[in-house]
Length: 347
Ligand code: AMP
Ligand code: MG
Image 1 (tube, rainbow, N blue to C red):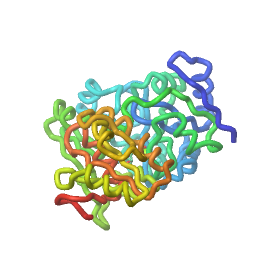
Image 2 (cartoon, helix red, strand yellow; image 1 turned 30 degrees about the horizontal axis):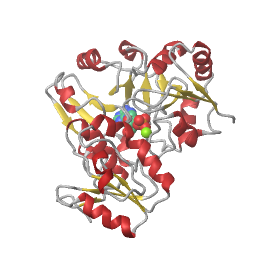
Image 3 (cartoon, rainbow, N blue to C red; image 1 turned 180 degrees about the vertical axis):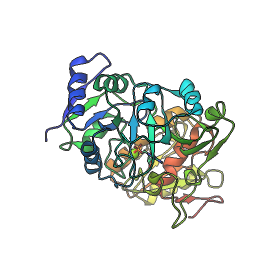
Image 4 (cartoon, rainbow, N blue to C red; image 1 turned 90 degrees about the vertical axis):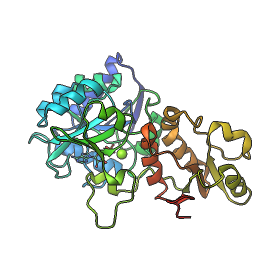
């Protein structure tokens, strides 16, 4: 299959039309969103959705997020509640996914047999315009091969999906850079399943009852059933061994300088550390305090680390608070919980 790539904006009617037709015909289309690129299919078409799992090599027990154009479109596919609309008022359209009891119109293949469905209303103008134009809900996980870092540029999607899908819409680099915040809700309670740009503090402004699922920060215990199937899969892993250094306990610069002398390694360092390290295989993540930029660059740099062909990658252990929790959650899984130094240290 030939994979076409088109630069696309909200008013690229011909291209959006083509994409909407493909989706209605049961084909897969890669779509830019504000978080990462999605691999979209008609959420009401079981066979189209099964092709998402095939193209990604995604385990069939890991459910898909269903994308809608307006918060109220959730009524067609799920049983909403009061809290859903409070959240929608504040964060939709935007990088928040809400899990609700599903209606029968969503095939069980989309939700991996669960009786709930994950719903998101993207704010990206291309994604939003396309869902409206297609007139159907769009099931879309991240458009990477399973296990690889999520794609944040059309080139990343092309690297993973060339020959497997007919169309990639190129909307430039994604704004946020990590996947949406995923929450499960009842009438008066929120459980955070995956941290993203909508933070715990932001959720607390809407509902005082917010808890964080254990697997967001910790390894799943063997035999434990996760609240979200995606939690149990190795994710975002670069080919090289990634180690996180807890710089409260280890002098990052001294430690890494030694490694640079003896190992084939790359270093994800803060911009202000570039001058202090040997200028070899450095992957600057942004300034120490610039969490937005660090989030945006995270998956780009993990993919670049792979291209360098090094044996190991060293990076700072990110803070697990505030906006940084999303980076912490992705990095801790990318390194398979290999943290050097400190109470969590295993090295
Ligand atoms: P991705 O589509 O790759 O961004 O991943 C979507 C994430 O949402 C995965 O971790 C899924 O396990 C999770 N998810 C989707 N639907 C549900 C659901 N109904 N219940 C719990 N987790 C879900
Ligand atoms: Mg994914």
